[in-house]
Image 1 (spheres, rainbow, N blue to C red):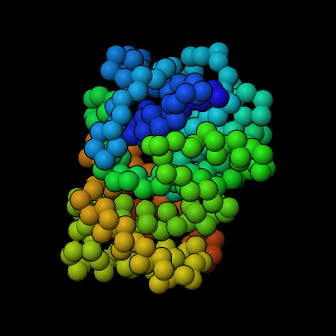
Image 2: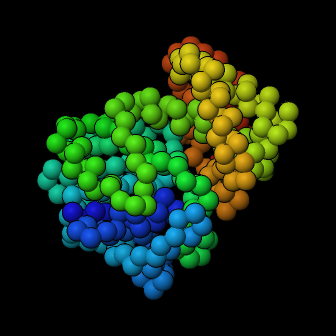
Length: 297
């Protein structure tokens, strides 16, 4: 199978490495010539709790005449619209797409695709070296995948063979909304607070004041998306904080490296759903305003 992985961040490099196996032709798409040259020179390395080194074909985004059977979109949520506008030509007839973004704000945009569409959640702790194509796998989790649109059992059976390998633990789910909301609750509780406080995930359960702030954010978020499984979801948030206590959240890493934050995908989506469901979210709005440097005077 011919596979394109769009996005050469930690998630894209990790998935490209995992999918590169006998019988599959994987190409990773980079946003810059320099980045592509470094990947071609050094290959892609996984270190930490998973170790491997792969030499994977590299293309510059927009610079190919090839068509692919599976396109994995591993860019930040705010780049999804650009991928849909510029890279739809990559798909063979009958191709499948897998989108692995944080948050849920991008979902409506995926409806323009006539192909088979899946969405996924990456629960590995992945940290990319700033200069080299090296991904430090600090936590082993799962890649969860659910059908989103134009999918049938035959297509899913084929997808399962593609993702069957030693580097990935894949959980196939039936309902994308449930799967993404579970991850969204974790993200909105952990990511913005750690980015504001500049602390590891574990600090949110170790410092009483931080834990109380997280609980208040959790309460608003649950109400905004009309979930009632409060006990189960809160225990899950605490469990993730404990399991990833030494980690920096993706939003904190983005803030440290001066990258745009996935605010609209995670925090903004909760605010939108609150408005739709007539639920006030003042504390979630405060997080958004504190982190939204683009609109600061």
